[in-house]
Amino acid sequence: MSSVVGRLVRVLGVLGVVLALLLPMQANAAPPVTGAIGDRWQQVRSMIGEPLEPEFCGLVQGGCAQRFERGSIYRTERTGAREIRGAIRDIWGANGWERGISGYPTSGEFCGLRDRGCGQRFQNGNIYFHPRYGTYRVFGAIFDGWSRIGWENSTIGYPAAGEACGLRGGGCFQRFANGFMYWSPASGSYAVTGRILDHWAANGWETGRYGYPTSNESCRTEGGVRICDQNYQRGRITWRSDRGIVTPAAPATVAAAATTRPSAGGRVDCSVQRCVALTYDDGPGVHTNRLLDTLGRNDAKATFFLVGDRVPANAATVRRMRDMGMEIGNHSRSHPNLTGYGSGTIRSQLAETQNRIRTASGVTPTVVRPPYGARNSTVDSVAREQGLSVIMWSVDTWDWRDRNASTVTNRVLGQAKPGSIILMHDIHSTTVDAAPAIVSGLKARGYELVTVSELLGGTQPGRVYTAR
Image 1 (spheres, rainbow, N blue to C red):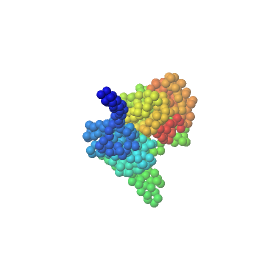
Image 2 (image 1 turned 180 degrees about the vertical axis):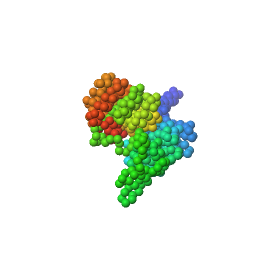
Image 3 (image 1 turned 120 degrees about the vertical axis):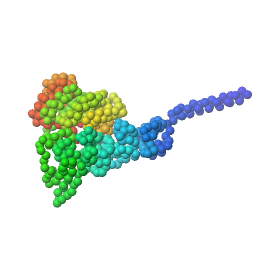
Image 4 (image 1 turned 90 degrees about the vertical axis):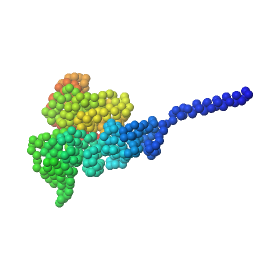
């Protein structure tokens, strides 16, 4: 009897060991991936990795989703199961996920587009990524107008900013790599680019002589001469390769209305002219409008790197920067040392500031200055992902430390060289006090005062610049 009991004890002991080994394995088992999401996962597993949590439902339109290592899969009966990841997922999420304007994805990400671009279709429009221009939504009437002229293969190329509205007559516009799309309820959605764009801008954009475009540009060749026409609400603009714009010039008072949006060619050519870029960090603040007064009186341009937390309360000042042709840059949401954080926090700091500036002004920055100038490969990588060039400086005025207008002025005038990027902070009254002497002193030395992007002649996302 005792031998039987002994054998039973040994068997139970072995079973206990086996169970002890199996239970941790069960506890660490990956979440299940089933149904339509499971089917799609099998197709894209190498791209989005393993599941992080079980499928969850109760989303709008009866949707469900599941998170994976490098993305998510969303499904509805209408759209099917579609994966979403990377920069496109970030933009989609920042604009409300499935509850936003775009709705659910209706395709997976597709790449191999012109110049290494990628895109993804949604219920209302698409989101496009380009390594130089960034990641932006195109939707609604502007999306429809852009699709009619050939998407990214059109004359205006990829989106380079988000849509902005609030124009005359309920209009909206969106900047693209080589032009704009404009829409209003009365005129429809059309592209404006090239020399015709320059002439339209010089005549006051949609509020000026011509009003909104009512057709796309139409070009032809006659006797070896290239001729392009575009119709507007109050006339037509014609350009000829042999004579330029042949539309009669507008009165000077109308032409003077041109202000804010960039046109081809730029204001100056810093490859041959003596240019410097004045840059101001940490605003907008209580002294910023006084600085803008000085710059405006002297036809001087500057670049303002804004802190996102300060933008909503100073939206009118941000719009004034835009209207004066100043460049608006990203300086993070709350001004932390970004090198102390991972990519997720850095992405949030930059993306939230992009959104706040875009909401306040319709402008999407293409340049960023990391707070304190603190940057590393992670900061540069996230900047590249969000279409931002990293702008440092070649002249440090130390204005935050030496709160003295004469000292700051002497440093600028003594150290400026053609191609310099000059660091200052418009939150300090003494720095703004120095502005008149700095501007007049630089101009007396033959310098053009330009924005960073004008100085550099264009920038590449993720690349670091300290001077021209």
